Length: 473
Ligand code: AMP
Ligand code: ZN
Image (cartoon, rainbow, N blue to C red):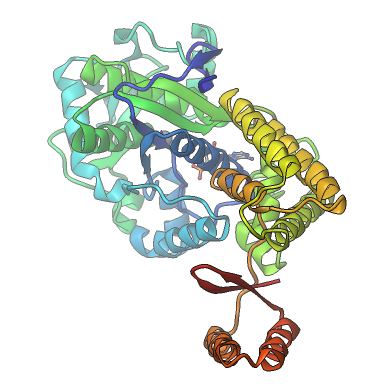
């Protein structure tokens, strides 16, 4: 079987076929760094991490772009409220975002273009749209996109014209536009923009980019530089971005390039709390740092999110997180057992058969629109049946451990190793060297004593052909 993904453009499951395999260009809308991201935002970023990791696991060469929205209505408002310049206000949130990604073991994007550092590309895109006659300067000095000039507008969100009108009216100064549905590409600079340093000169007037324009300009700029194309293989984000954000991204990009903007659109469902979307606005949020301060193992968060399909809403609760924590612990214990049952390369038939079945189920599940809950079910079946085999005396755990480790390149849900104090690793190395010396002198009593000494400190050692390895248990 090959990978099939649900494409929001067609509302169908489609075989995944990138433009120029094995390369895959992936753009994911990044955080708005006006504040700390909450774990609802991270549900989306973790779904994208699953997508990225599974593409790589499947042999694709992924070029992953994630932008940082460091200038928009929210960042400007927050900076002004804090009496700071934009850059000064967003810097700590950018840093916190990367620290949170590390904590959650999110694979790093290859580039993180920042809106404030990509203004020239944005100005060029607006100019291109003006030249093409699909954009115009409104009476208020802002530049708007003329939706009437882009007949396929609404294709992604499948909204009819009436709904689009209602959607657009919410945040618009209608008097300035030719059509109330039109959206701003470039907003004329306000005094507040000037105050926080969020205004740039452009041939069509001093101002700042609209949020939708930022993503179009940054993605086209990056794939142009890396791959000389104007079409992304995959564009992803949360479902709330389908309209108007992604709809507007398509309109701007395709009106400028004449090429399809993205071949596959993937959208992740919400993280909720008691049935309500987790959101700063509703105050029902938790941040990654809250969890870290509560000493929650990031693996538990990863497992919890993996156990619900990305296109289904997930209700967050402490109980569900604790249950996922138990699952992580079971996995870690199982792996430890496999390591202990390692031994010579004469794999026990039962464990090898279980491992082979697991790997094929695991792939089939993820090939089916990233069905991570089914992949997790296969994983826990391996744990259950593998423990049964080990209880019955099966040996040669290496083959099952290798299968487990390969799957972890995608799910990455084994317990986080306990941090060791500085100097501790040096002490362990010194003890292992002393043990080697004792063994060399055939002083096995001393060697066993040192092994026990290490064990008392929670260090387990394993003698391998390439030397003695150790880890915390
Ligand atoms: P923002 O920082 O507001 O631009 O949002 C970053 C990402 O988080 C976007 O892809 C949103 O769709 C996503 N997002 C926002 N709230 C939630 C939520 N409760 N559950 C899942 N994703 C969310
Ligand atoms: Zn975006």
